Image 1 (cartoon, rainbow, N blue to C red):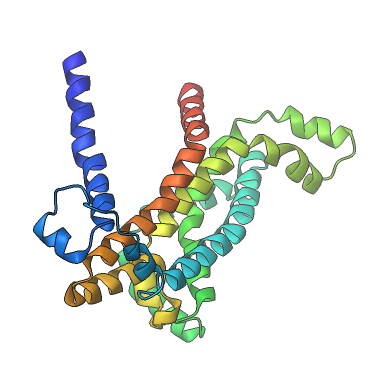
Image 2 (cartoon, helix red, strand yellow):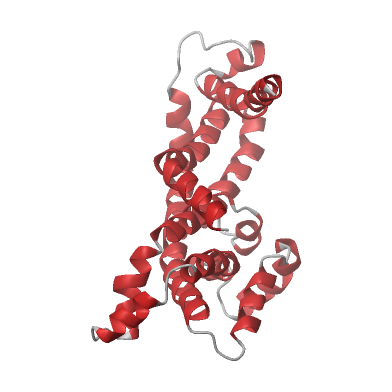
Length: 271
């Protein structure tokens, strides 16, 4: 058993950690050193690669575009999902199970099947090549998963809390915002983290729905840079760009990792 765990640990390190470390090391090397000694430590750390990636390769623009898109998507997505899942979990009505099944079915629709209809719809609504259009489509695609997650958390909250709040004179809106939503914080955090990871890495929809390079998000901008830098031979800036893409997600995960683990374990025990 110990041997199996040790083997899995080393396998995890080999598959996940080593490629990341290799990318970080190469991000500090000049281009000729990356070609001649790709597996060695950098002889003298070169931070110019990060400056070139951020300024000359316009990473700063893509970074801001992605940041705004993710924040605005979450600002619309989370309140709508929380309200919808709360009503479905606590106030079942005729057709509520059908609506919940519709949300669940939305999670199994492959993204590539919807790209062409979404492209045509965005053009028809004059939302093609706009950040607003991309944000609204991200909200629509993220809604099923977020409602599905929050529904489970609202469902396990006791109904007596709603009755007590009602006896104290609280309206439905006050009960939701002041009582139930704070208690559903673990679920909100899980939905928030997984949506941040998914939206930050989303590539195909952004590639199809945005044609203006000034509006590219990080994954699409990264793809564009990979196409150009490999011909210019600036491999150092390319590796530095990869690190810039990965670091925000790693920070988010390490900041909230304990909360995520606690919530997942609590959900497994309750389940």
